[in-house]
Length: 365
Ligand code: CP3
Image (cartoon, rainbow, N blue to C red; front, side):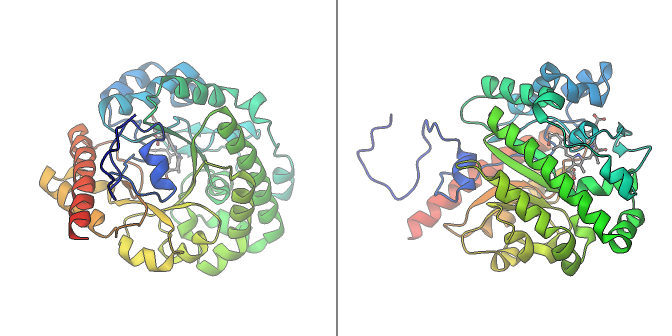
C-alpha cells in the first residue's frame, strides 16, 4: 500500500483495487477523469475487422471466446478505464422468440404489431437462453486488469420496442407511434414485458460479474416530455428499481433526450449519459444535486486533427466543477470511419487534462 505520510486533499493515483471508473460513478473525488467510448469494440479497429471477416455479427455475439476477444481489443490498445461487454441490444429480442438479422443495423422480418404478437413474446430465462453472454462476462472478469471495470448493458424497453414494432431503423418510426397512440394498452403491455426481460437480463449480468450496467435509450428522443412521462418513464423507473444493486452503478443513456433530462434524472439512475446536443453546463442545473454525468463529445470530432480534438475535449472538461462526478465518453457510438490515432489522442488528453485541472484547482483553493 502507499505510504500516506503527507495528507493531501487531492485523491492520489495509486494501486487502487477499486477502479477509477467505479469511484467516479459514485461521485467520489478522483485523481483524473475516467474515459470509455460507446461502441469501443467495432469496425474502426483493424483487428475487429479481421475477426469479422470470418464470422457474421450474430455468431460473434453468440460465441463467448470471440466476444471476449473483441471486447478486449480496445482495452489492449488504449488506456480506457472501462470495458463494455460485446453484444447487441437485440440479443434478448431473439431470446423472446423474434427472428433478428443485421444489415448492418437490426432487421426484423415479422415486426411485433398486434396484441397477439405481444402476448406470444416469451420471458426468457437468461441462464438458459443467453448463457453465452453470461459466459462472456465471466471470461472478461478473469481477463481484464483489475483497474478496468466491466460494464454490462441492455437496450432500454422503448428502444427495443422501436426496432421490434418498426422492423428496423426508421426516420419517423410511424408504426411504433401508431401502436403507442392508437393502442396504448398493447403498447404498455409490450413495454412491461420488455422491462421484465431486460431486468432479468441485467440482474443475470450483475450476478455473472458486471460491475456497472448501462441502459441504452437511443430512440427516447423521439418523444415529447409528456409522452415520455406517460409511455416510457414508469417502465424505466420500475426496471431500475428492480435492477439496482449495491455497489453497481446504473447508467441511463439517452440520445436526443435534451428535452427529457428532468424525467431521466427521476428514474433512479445513478449516472445520466448525455449526447452532444447540449452543453454539460446547461444540463447540470436540470439534474439533481450531485448527479454524475457521462459524455458528451460529438463522435464526429474524432475526424478532426489532434489540436481540435484536444480543444473540444478541454471545453467539456472545463464545464465540470470540483466535486461534480463525470465520466468522459462520446455523445453516441464511435463511427466506423474513425482513425485509431484519434482515439489515442483523446484518451491520453482526457487523462492528462483531467489530472492537470484537478491539481490547478487544488492549488487555487
Ligand atoms: O459498445 C461496445 O463496444 C459494445 C457493443 C455494442 C454493439 N452494439 C456492437 C455492435 C453495443 C453496446 C451496442 C448497442 C446498440 N446496438 C445500440 C445502442 C447504442 C447506439 O448506438 O445507439 C443500438 C441502437 C444497437 C442496434 C444496432 N446494432 C445498430 C444500430 C447497429 C448498426 C451499427 C452500425 O454502426 O452500422 C448494430 C450492429 C452492431 N452492434 C455493430 C457492432 C460492433 C456493427 C456490426 C458489424 O460488425 O457489422
